[in-house]
Length: 401
Ligand code: ARG
Image 1: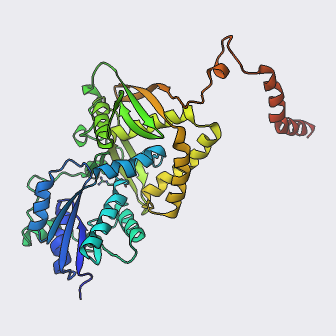
Image 2: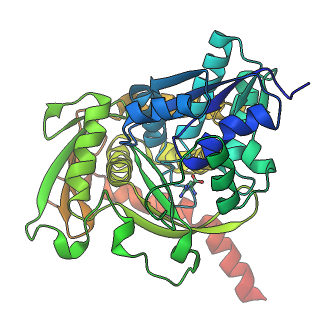
Image 3: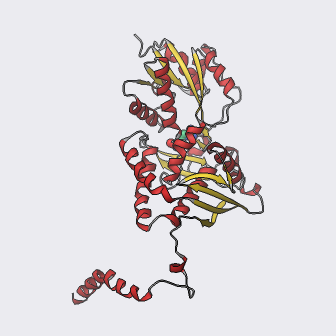
């Protein structure tokens, strides 16, 4: 008796997930492996990937375009929440995982599979995100993670695959582990494991080196409706096009690179390089528009919510009661976050230089230092007396000893 009869495997086309196909069948007695390659804008050619799965022994090879949902249902809520894990990482990889989990669970239902599988190892965050998301969506379904258990080195994995006609990678494989989608690239391992080693220029693909960026600044205006980005420079853009346009525009100015040591869910510190041009700029612009449209107390309270929201995405809790509850709060706050933010892109910086909104609560009559000032200056005195009263009482007490 095998561990499962029919399995839907998350498939990337790489050696590890390809080897999972014969491994599941030969070692774990799985009768049928259906692969699912999610197109999240990673830019791979999906035709060859589809065939590669069949050549590696899959009975059915699915390719599902998830790009639209990825942007609308995963990236946009994260932008509304201004999420930056540990204040820096906009979660470009982490956001893809719950969507892939959902696709796996849906395919399992459609094809009558009793398990789903992924090729994650035991050290990363992604195994946590897959396993927990799948359990949340269908707790009956088994989750198989062969690469977590097989204990094969890279070389052993390649020779295992060769026995089953899976070709070894043709070019000398890159020392880096790279994850890529529409929202960005995550690059780790190899020389980057030394936290003091500067990332070589070759690891970047979406952002230019500052030395190669234009010598003139470029202005860009991003439009939002109820917290959702809807346009660039006055043109209304569909979600995928909006992200693609901004990646290009912003990346060209060398904006969107992050180099950080982050704390993984499994307790390990790891060094990761990211490039997420559109997503980072969208979060900064969105936060700025909130500064014009939200009250002070909502803004401050939301900071805490944003932090929790970012952590739960990172930690694999996208499908969770906390996420749903925080969504309700965030959605409520976004009703009047509509307007336009203007940024100047230049030499690695996206500087916010202006913002406007019909729902702005910035009040020129109150803010101005000119004669039009409507603020009641005398009222400030009484306010300060009351506001400072506890401090005054304390100071008097201290003087008396
Ligand atoms: N550290 C990132 C995260 O946990 C990315 C993980 C995948 N990184 C990679 N280079 N393959 O979301």
